[in-house]
Image 1 (cartoon, rainbow, N blue to C red):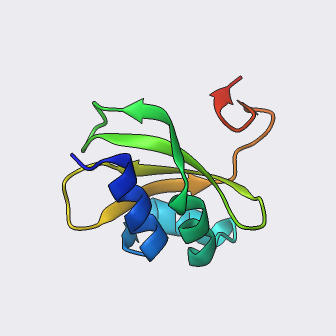
Image 2: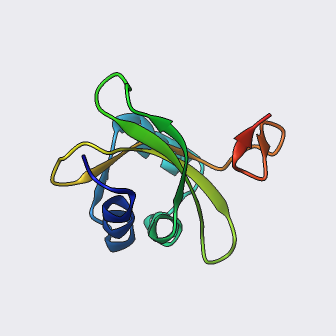
Length: 102
């Protein structure tokens, strides 16, 4: 299984792929590849899903250079490339400090 640091490096370098769902969400929410790279470089895992349906995954929180908070669920599978399962800007009505569910 990949480490968080390995996933961060892949996100920062642009070595990732989107699920169909995540790609649609990124377009709908106007989240650029550059923002993903910035937020991914220092992302922290805020929820862990070791028994996820297809492979172990986690919900990460990262911030863009402009300070935009992004949540992205990524796989931690030992694949050649990290996959982003979904991506969104956390809703303050649902999250405390972007890190904890209300």
